[in-house]
Image 1 (cartoon, rainbow, N blue to C red):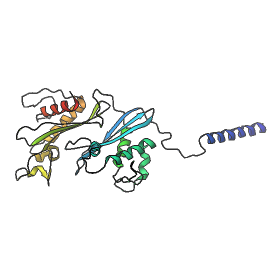
Image 2 (spheres, one colour):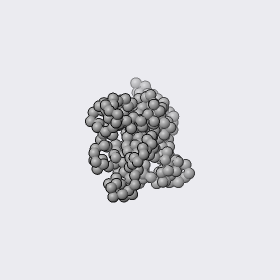
Image 3 (cartoon, one colour):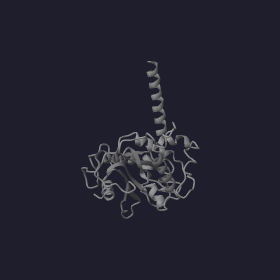
Image 4 (spheres, rainbow, N blue to C red):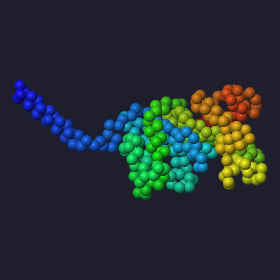
Length: 288
């Protein structure tokens, strides 16, 4: 009986040794080892536009065969300027933001787990010395927004496939031509992921001259939008626009009943502004 027990112990030790050799002999996991996700396209965005620069970041993460195959970091502005990443690529942002964003994206694709970056921040603002661009320069922007949004996206359900064409940078933007003597320019951004509209921003920006009468529409030399002004615009246009945005996201379209020729509707509860401009922007941006 003792010989049988010794034989079984020997076989157990041999099997354990073989498993250790097969796994490389290390207890430390390699990058992304064991991290798998449900296939699909994931999305997350910040809750509000930032004070100051007016941007709101978003992240789109694509998972195929259980692994992150693509990650995109972008941002939209309260004043409706398009995707921050695209503006940077076109030299219209003011700094080369996009190659630094791409360095964060590449890290996530290689390492698969956004939480693994938590130990790599060097400041409370979310800067790091762990990333370099393709050109070999250090990343100077704070990247905590990207990794936090990636966590949020991957913790949610994938975005359902919708009927719209997804723009290459996910953001479709439209601006209405100004009418004669008009000083408010209507604009809208629509963020589309996997064919589904996931964000909408209907706004109107003051484009007139600064004077004693219009100074209230400025912050220093910067002209403001109706959403930024809030009730200081003279009425609560901003909340009406936000309700219109919410209606579009819920219905994935903008079919409303107009009650007059000025563009007012009784379809969206609590909305008293004319919304025909929003419908025109929607149709222009998304090709309807």
